[in-house]
Image 1 (cartoon, rainbow, N blue to C red):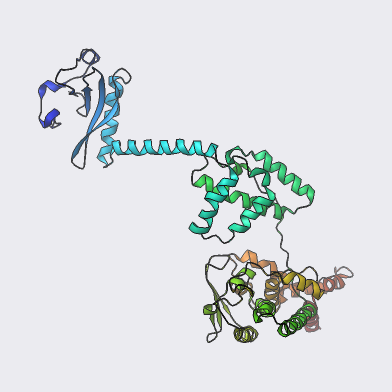
Image 2: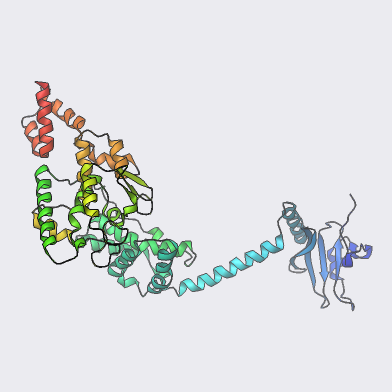
Length: 449
């Protein structure tokens, strides 16, 4: 196939085509008319650009989108003829697929310069400044993270000694020592891991966004902790007490001159008992997502922990609670707005003093959700259905309630029929059971008689 590589000026020139050799290259002289090119007959893609200064530069010729281009390989002397021919062949191979080596080189140079500037920046990156000027705006505005305030407070409280340090100066050993101190101080392993995860968030973002060249916390492991499957739920008597105290509180609140929304606690607690909503889901619930006609509460994906929309059917009590509470609605779309501002609350300060006043011990607001699930399981509702109502991502999360199911209790009771049953087994089973479970055990025993 004839060589159609154009010579300088767009015309083919035999005088500009030779088989390049080291002897020929050494004897090339500059011309008074200016720079000129010499094409290699061994590799038609290789060109020697002879400058007016006498410098000889190897370039690789190629076409991109119909336009001739010359990729600079390097000056003769620094690059050998053999290297130049090999490089010109590699450049040609790249262009066959449509790539543009010059543009790729330009982009690579930009990235290298940006990485260099980023490396310099990371040396001057102080944690406190990064949190205020970069991480917080990014988390709030770009990611819409509602927990950013909590994350920042945790860092300021637990890692204040890092705030004025450069982020890339953090040593994993420092965090290991902190974990050890907190364990000795009596902080639980789960609490230590949660606080450490708060610090991980900005460091991970800084690394992903290339503010840091490496993430020092990637070498730090969480404290290994046994999974806490704590399930605290109300007994029949405790629930009766809770409801009684809530009613008394509401009656006292209605007699006070405070706004009507100040007695939100009773409807919120009872709604949670009947739906299993998390506190955050209840605080973000809007009236537009309560369908009285269909009897459905819709928790949208931006309010749930799993980030998936969940539909909760309302029983008669839940529907009545919201119907009565809706009569107090005076402003906004939130079901439980702040009594002072009418905006969304982040927490409820009235819960802790209230529950302490009831005499019910070791009971958190989240345990209302456990009570909802436990009651369903004890009444024979399949675990999968309970999983869907709670919005658990995996069935394993719901299996913590499996020991409360009638079938599970029945298996235990059946063991009492065996001759090898140890003395006091029934007493032990009854001792660890709730009042509702005791009634269930008694019914199962009666069936066996």
